[in-house]
Structure formats: C-alpha cells, structure tokens
Image (cartoon, rainbow, N blue to C red):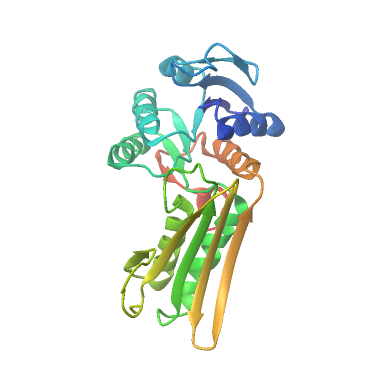
Length: 258
C-alpha cells in the first residue's frame, strides 16, 4: 500500500507544527492542513500545502487526519469525518460528552486511534503500571503526580487519567479518586488513587506513579523534554491506522503492546 496522505488540524499551534515536521521526517505527505477561519495561518503554506478553513475539502484530500486541537474542534472534525468515513488520529485531551459522542460515531464507520499520550515511553509506562498494580494489592497506596507547562487548560492530564485506568485495570476494579487534598480529609482510604496536577513554566510533560507500602515504595516515571515525541508517535499511528477495520484503537494497539 502507498504511503497515507495526511491532513493536519491546527497547523499554527505548537503540536500542529510539530506534526508537520514529524510527517516530513517520516517521509509522509501532508496533503491538507486545516485551521479555524480567523487563524492568521489561513492562506499560508505549511508542509507544502495551503492552510484552509474548508474542513470537508481537506478531508476529501487525505486518507487520515491528525487532531490535537480542542474538544469543540475535535467534535466538529469527527462529525465531518463520519460523513467522509475518514480515518483519524486524535490526541485532544479533556474531551467533553459531545466530543466523546462524535468520536464514538466516527469509530463506527472508520478506524480511529485515540490516545491521551502518543509517546512510546508513556505507553510503556502504562503497561508497567498495569503490571505493577496487578502484582501488588490495593494495600499499596497509589498516588499519581503530573506536571505540565502553565498554559495547559485541562487538569488532571489525559495521561494521568490513563494511569488511573491502568491501575484500575491491573487491580481488576474501579477505585475512588482523590484529585488533590485539602483540609481535614481524614485517613487515606484503602484502594484510593490520588491524582495531583502541577502547572508551571515550560514543562512538556512529567508523570509519576508511586505505590507506597509499609517500609517500601515503587516509583514509575516518564519525563518528556521535547514535544516532537508525541508528534512522531501520532504520525506512526496515522501510518498504522489507514486500512484497519472501523473501531476505536489506542497506542497500545499501534505498538503491539497487548
């Protein structure tokens, strides 16, 4: 099969620009780029193509689109892609109910890779977290700390929530979550998963799962220093997803980690 044609959403953003660069690095063609109608990038050239606000036309010119935008934009793109039956790679975090429903509808007619984090290292971390939680019972207290730059608008991060899900999957059951603690919260309940968000500076992304027991603790961490790792992973997912059966996939599937 020939190399897939890519459409990048939000090329004027930091991730959008990184995606265009990662596609060129991988030798894949960006055949369309879409931004909001009032974006200064409209009419400019990125990756050899002219940025447009015409989403339907852009989807018609590609095999798969990559979306790291906002929940509202992701919902609109997914609805347009459903009509076109276009494959997608979605890395937008903080999806609301409307965006979730739109992505679910798209996955019924096209293959869609959805992930909170596209880095190989983070996906290895998620697998290790699941294994550790399965090996250690909920008498080991699970605490997750994530840090990102001060401009990130959602908290906790999608990757932190994926770590919560990995711990729950390892334990085989859902758990109560404590998103930060303040005041007279009482003793820590057995099985609770603590989640804490730190914001500041230009931190690309840091995630640590710590499992505490009497006399010992286990720490699993990943630190990103260059957002290009997320773009490379997304481009790899885009090359993988084209031609797959309709459905919702994640990076564990792309990397063959399950």
